[in-house]
Length: 185
Image (cartoon, rainbow, N blue to C red; front, side):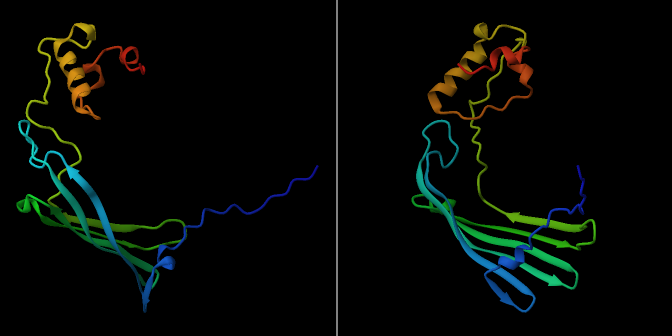
């Protein structure tokens, strides 16, 4: 029986600048165009009663760039997106997003400084409208869920409106024995 040892090597991290589309001296960059959120917004103004719908899209230019400065590297991303609404022109706007990072690769570590700035009119992905807050006064998580009025309203709301996310202060608000009530039907 023979044992052989070899050198242990850390994973090699590929230089993202090597795959850049364009090169001008030490500057490397890859431009692009992004199209997102293409479709129908069924509640443009987040209204509970009489929601307004509109066709919408977000599109615009983007660039990733890398600049080698001696041993250090400066990199970043920048993009702008025009938010288009077909009927409700007053909702149209420009979003900008910028990220930058300066790093200094050393033998065993890479210290870096980074930052980001966004100026956006986008709505977040979650829509919480008036009337969506459900509260069970004087009800404990230890009470059976079958007899809780607020919980029944929550289940009706989920069934009738395609709700995909429920935000709760703590899982014990649903039930003290969470495992009992979290099994799939």
